[in-house]
Length: 449
Ligand SMILES: Cc1ncc(COP(=O)(O)O)c(C=O)c1O
Image 1 (cartoon, rainbow, N blue to C red):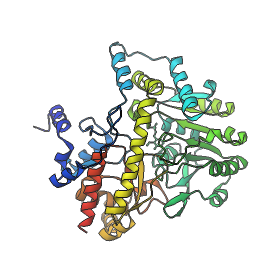
Image 2: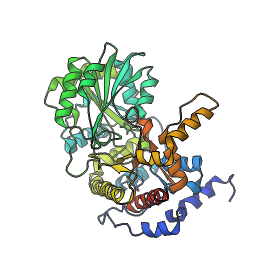
Image 3: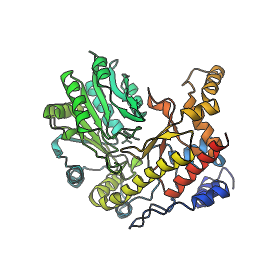
Image 4: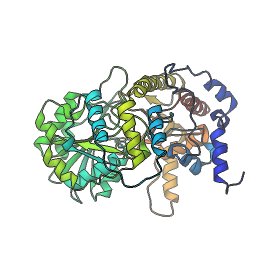
């Protein structure tokens, strides 16, 4: 098979069983994974995405070589086959072979409004709802509205790395407020927040549930934050894209359902179906507020452009996908529990706390860093750097070490801002078999140290 024959290569890769990428012993162990999801939908059979130009798998294979990637566990999308209602709606639509400009059908607006009402008890006023191609474009529109170039954007860190790009895109700088950590649990530092608000801090990005630490912020925490921001005239941009993923015993509280209406009116909420149904590349999202003035101003910076297939997929998910999602969520919760016990039993160099939300695990790898000399290696790498660029961090060394020794790609915690050092972010939204393969590979590599 030649490199100049990409289609054949893709077909070949797609048909290779996942176990072929790892040692036979590990594959056999992975086969022992407890079977989960005995319901209507199959989340348990690994669904290979290799050969589809995915970032999570194909980009890692392109960077590191296929012999070094058994499992991609980086970027936040899921490995499962899409909900059947989505595939059905898309299949029906592609029978009509015309792809001209798309109107915004009322049925799509209704789907968003009804989903938010049914699922989270949120009343979205359709007149105060804006659509766009993603949470990023939405956040950028809001930053352009409220945060002039040169100003600062407040964030509780470590936080989703994508926000840093949005902030610099708007000519602003991040104002990072590291969270407090007690026994691996993160909490907001309100004193520091008060202290850091200044004449040039006009917005705060809240992530609820919080990527990467998994916090589902409580009503009390968000009220305290909201009171400070309202009093100090900082607009709260609440990104709630991960809101469907909440682990057992925890709760997602929408920021816009806080009791104090003044706090709510000082906010904009950003949502999408893209995490819940893994529709990231379908490019659809929405934002809303109870403040007509905020929406009128953001509207001027928001481009409401989405694709036909994106709209069709999202509308199908929101109108017919609930059953699929409700069956997926316990599977993800069980994945979290599995990661938690596996790490406790078999990875003494790693610590983690089961997150309250998201499908992301936040791993404390500081002992692993020490063991492999990651800090020293990063210093050496930076000395050798020929051109100025992003400095190599110990977490990037761990990323490479895991790829080379465990064939698993996870994201370096340093990408998530202040407080991310000594950590890695691992995406667990995959079949239990694939998850077990990744963890087993990682544990075996660490056991050799
Ligand atoms: C917290 C958070 N916000 C936004 C995004 C990206 O949103 P979109 O793809 O809709 O731009 C992600 C993706 O991982 C995320 O984790």
